[in-house]
Length: 459
Image (cartoon, rainbow, N blue to C red; front, side, top):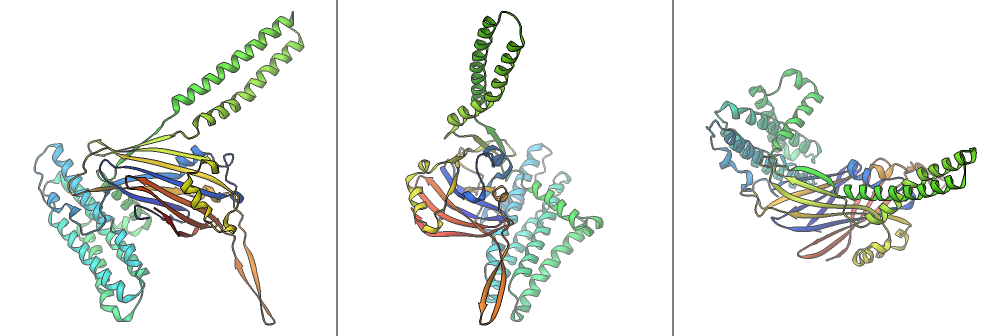
């Protein structure tokens, strides 16, 4: 599916990525088919707890390629000599847009790492290094003379230099090795050394910080958050049914209390004086009230809430607080009869051995871009939703064992692990229609082993 991408994020997390245009409306659905043997149910995994702890959203301005003119070099080359706050804000915003564009070169590094042959890998790596070197030179030619702006520049320059060095060291470490490309490898080594020497010459980091890997890494994480100002949108999450939930709880309490008071009045008329039997009867009544009030409230609330949206994410520009994007979110357990026909048909295309008893878990996100246009040069924003699957493996068995085989007169064995398979259907609905894709997520207790996009696609 071109519009929406699903990929692995960390050992036990997945990421949904998609782009949105100005004033675009889009709906994303995820239907998880969780095998019953995984032990996931409303009694073991609370929907609201999972949402707040394990689902994260991220939204920012987006550019698909590093070399596009979105780097806004002409903006950061301007000298904001004004002393007013607007000049500082404008410079910082444009500097961060430029820096963030360089920072997301991680995508280009990952694409280069997919090249398995040295003949393809090294020319692509050299080209990427040349592109980044040119963009960094543009940035450093625009060093501000105003001391009020220099701190913004130094923070961004320090982080980008470190990030570039780390990215290319990773590229060289994981890339293919070949004696025929010694010159190219040396060029990339020199590029990394130059960035390291540049930071030393600028005295960006103290020797104490440099000598401690944890300190330098945490410092760079802080600088990374600073350059996201104005580029990554601020998120505010609202629980939509708070007042309705209060109304339901109050109504149930009022009805139960009215019933209890009726029983109490009848008991007082039946007993002419206070006796042990009266006290025991009243205790029984109030005990039953406390026992069943919460259960009755939960049953009624589940009936009312089923199918209703639960949360709203509001994304705002971090500089001017202008609202950019609204998200309405659903998360709930569903039954097979709640599946749309197209999704159910796709589930039914699984092989017979894969049609095991399962619990259905549904996530829905309705996106609405409010603004009519983005900042100059930007046509899209990127939305990312991260799902941590760690709670899904809480009840899994380790399942370590041995597989034995006979080779002539010799018996051999090898270690095997127990794996589980989650079927996931990703559904996207926009102005072009409905798009579906099924994925198989294979995982064990410690990691996601594989994510496979199945060939059957319905558009």
